[in-house]
Image (tube, rainbow, N blue to C red; front, side):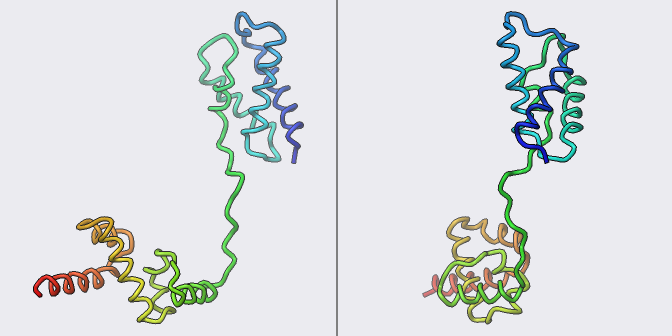
Length: 184
């Protein structure tokens, strides 16, 4: 892989060759032109994805700029940046390298300690196979109550859409207990 400075230098050479066919913007001194070229090269080094084929990637950007540029003067730095492919985020989450049993055990442990758990996992089909029924029901009822508190009459539809029909019995149970309480 190229270093940042190598990418910047490579981009500068390619951009300078590319801009030969255009006129520099009026009113820019040679020093200002050099600064603008350096800024464009720096943008390539900062914003382009790091790849073995960096030179080819820069050439592709330059071709996209040439295809869309509508002036005989240098394109702006922004025109180059807009033509660049998106750089992947610098920080990516690590791939999941844990076993299903380990996550189930961790979830059960957290539930027994009355700690929060991932709601997607709580409503997943896997949860019914691994989590004790009484513990699972306790957390699912709490999830239903939280959604009702937040979304009122829209809660059932939102949760059914997100988690499927598994939520229906819990809503039915909540409605029965609410109507029984109202009758008293």
